[in-house]
Length: 134
Image 1: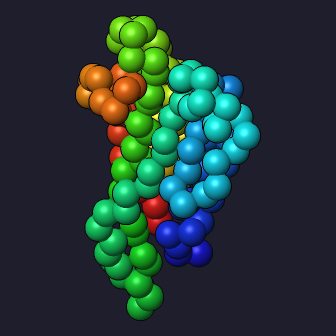
Image 2 (image 1 turned 30 degrees about the vertical axis):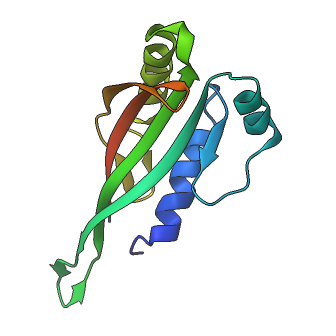
């Protein structure tokens, strides 16, 4: 079966739901009570965004097989006055949980992290995990 954008989103969100880290916010989804509480209390939290990339259709015999790619981006927010260590530890944890994960025809690749630093009252790291499906 060819991967759909929705099947990719569901697989990634299911994987993150099994992570035992801080609360996660998903694009366009209502905030959970745990996430609202963390933000209000200025505790660590993560925002997950799935950026779809190129899709192409290589032929297998006489039928095209769709292949998709993209990047899972996890913005890590920690209290601004706590330094970089808490954000780096969460980045390590979420990277370990996501990279090399496979579900059906979805494969997450090697994670990378970028220090963003202070932003809008939070300290931020960005973890990026490329994926391919199909």
